[in-house]
Image 1 (spheres, rainbow, N blue to C red):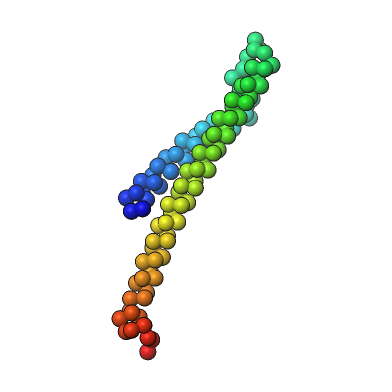
Image 2 (cartoon, helix red, strand yellow; image 1 turned 60 degrees about the vertical axis):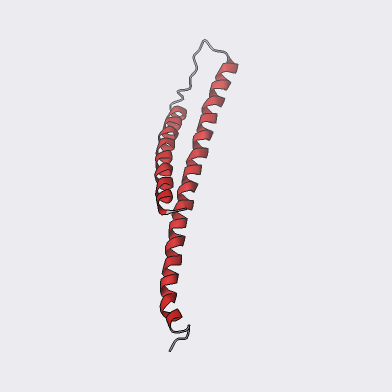
Amino acid sequence: MNRGNRWLAILVAVAGMGVCLVALVGFVLTVLSNNLPWHQARTVREYYQAVGESYSQGFTVGFFLCFFMTMIAVTISTLFDRRQKTRLRMARSPLEEHGGHSC
């Protein structure tokens, strides 16, 4: 993964997390205020279907929030891994110039 792709992945993941957080707050507020899409004229079956739909949406939002968080974690870990490899390579360079022996 090159540098441009890493930053693009981070940008997409941050944007995705933002959308998921907004949807998650909406879901939590719906549950807290008991504002399910149901009216008194509907049957009990329709009420439970509305509850199921709401929780399914909450599950989907939670899944994608975890997905984007994992995407950021993997991308950032590749950044740190590449930097560490570069530092190790730079630290070994002086030793390799002298045949690998320290004086």
